[in-house]
Length: 401
Image (tube, rainbow, N blue to C red):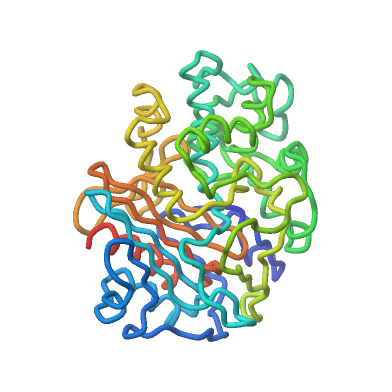
């Protein structure tokens, strides 16, 4: 399954940093093994930054989350790992491991900003569902209702694809990200229509409604529908309806041409080809992600967002219920709703979130119905199955600890 626009080794050796490769369910990636060993953090020298306990105590007695982050750096060769965890009583702790800059060895900023990739889809879905609640969008209306004549291609017809199918990834629309290379996605600005046009050059993956298949193209179309219905830019609607509404002080949609990260952040690294050296990919134009993957945020802001969402602070009950109505997405127990996933926990129950990959960063996490929240970020997309699973395991430890 595909998590976001990300690296892939499909179609020969060409690297596609934003290609939609499998990762939502099990974090499986077959891009080769990491070879660079960044400075490691031992269990006895943890970089935990708890809000409710002293850093000295955490260093002396690293908990399961800190040990998991340390292992991501030491064993899986992540340059850095960050986490934010909130328990049922609302007590929060932040954690770091590794280094924020491989060149200088600088510390990882506490709760630093990162590119959150496909977590952006949850934000886009919320805006769409708010408009559904306002009677401006019908989930079961066809795309042509809002964008007449726009979606046409081989096996593709916007008169047969519904808004629900876009948000649920059951439209059968092809992925555009696999047709972009590193240099393009790093340096080029893309208009949303360019991304859609790139996808429409290729035949449908399946008939609408027949199967689940992750495609960033779905969310580019969802963003275009938002703009058509509201008459305003998607970024403005997202900021007004979500970011400012619930006080996400470190979350923003980068402006046109904005290639840097505004506030303290660990640097993000990307490997291309799979057995090559890590390259600093912090500075990049994220427009190839747009409604599917452009946002920048922090672990704690993601916890706040998903907590507010599940608590009903962003959507009416009827639309939240639609968002939480899921279909199977693979074999690991992951299920996909409308821009929202559920994943089983080792301690029982599930957690709700999304996750995201973008060249330089991977984020995983979510919240439980009883108020627990956790999000983990690493500063390079894992390039093997085990490392990818270890990021998910760190989230599980945080929520089950």
